[in-house]
Length: 456
Image (cartoon, rainbow, N blue to C red):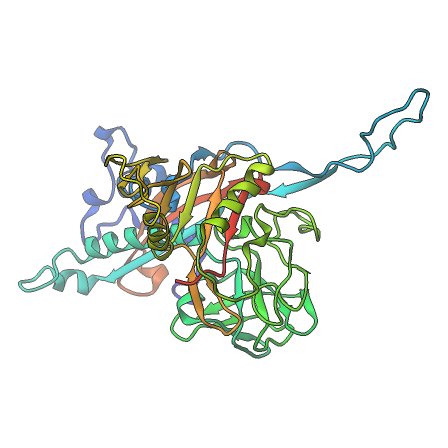
């Protein structure tokens, strides 16, 4: 077994074994003493000072960053492992009845089960014993472990946010039996452990081609998967199961999308959706609002009509949009669109609260927008970009969301574990780990919409 090839359970067990030994920082620094009310002889990690202090620090940072995570309500996980939703109300069960006429045909609703289990996100870091000592000498970096810990906190926050905003799939520019290539700047949307399926450019969607991602090269854009159907230029890789948090792009994915010969949507109207249920979403059902959000992999400029139609479709489906999410490129495009309609009826700068964050400052005359049709606008740099049928990276997507039905269910807030078990690592190294347990829940996908294939 490699040094880093261990499970979370093994890592915690090693950390517990190492807590009673004096390390570089000493035993007193590693754990709270009994006068603080925590039993240092206990093997439970809940009494560890790092879990209590630094884990809490990361959790607080998560809730104080201007990020999509911060705009979504958070709730305790609870006792549920999923829920049931009605995807079909039945046909012919309601109609007028004439005098002495027959009753409507008895039909039943189609009830689907949504599985929702917590996902683990982890961030590791470490330093050597010698490096820690040398860094404290004159001219050194100082507290090397503290420096790495601070950077790991930032990385952990970034990872959770990017998972929540990961793309549900994209066009493949080249491929082989076990690899496919996507634009390098978009490769981070694929994570090790994700299951992907192919929409073949010639034959359409093939769920049986699905295989698990084993590595991602964010420099070249090459994604390695298990042996399966050979990938080729023009195919589309769709993520059907996540190793980490479900993303909002998974939620608004359409079951049927008519596309060009290449580009998102594949060869024809094909089933291509994230597997929200045990059996998968069925063609023609479980569609999100604004099904015209695609443009067959062809870039187009943002228009107010596109945005208005998405809001309209959500309201027709019974929702009331509470948040418009977009990248900074689309934010400035929208600002230029509205600036032409500015009316100088007074100048009053204001901001709108979104969860525990606020929008950029705006005015009620339309310039420097903070809202559109009364809906707050949040710009996040992690919003995914579309990829054109020519393999070019387009502008960021726009999401119109009814956050009344969206929540981050937290099973375990961010925990910190420090490992000084030199024998387990077979090296004189100090290792740290942040991990968070939770998942994105969306109780109504019919009232969440997206606009894709937009120019920057």
